[in-house]
Image (cartoon, rainbow, N blue to C red; front, side):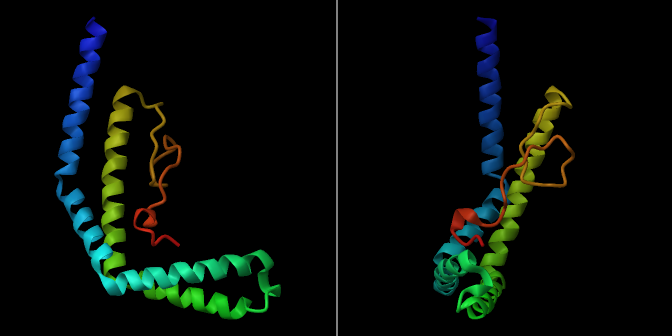
Length: 147
């Protein structure tokens, strides 16, 4: 019975922590930048053009430089990726996404290490010490613009 009460207290604390994170400036900035990214016609056009070109790129990659369109596709994909990456909304979203991921990584690290320094903590940040076991990539996958 005592273990059940303790677990309920832990779950309540976890819910409270998640609410703090959801209402943080970092999470709000993430939501705002995601909204701008999704609702900018110019940004969405760049993402769609890049995504279509990625299909050609993947086809060319199967044959390498022996593919007849290798040089053209490689040049075009680099230009489209650069154009997409330099878009203000994409850049702002990626910064916000990285800030939110950094916050979540730090919270996970604090929680894990409060139990034991040997607890493996999933993290998208390769700069956390050896206690990390990999994780997210932070490339914008949730918005569909990952490269």
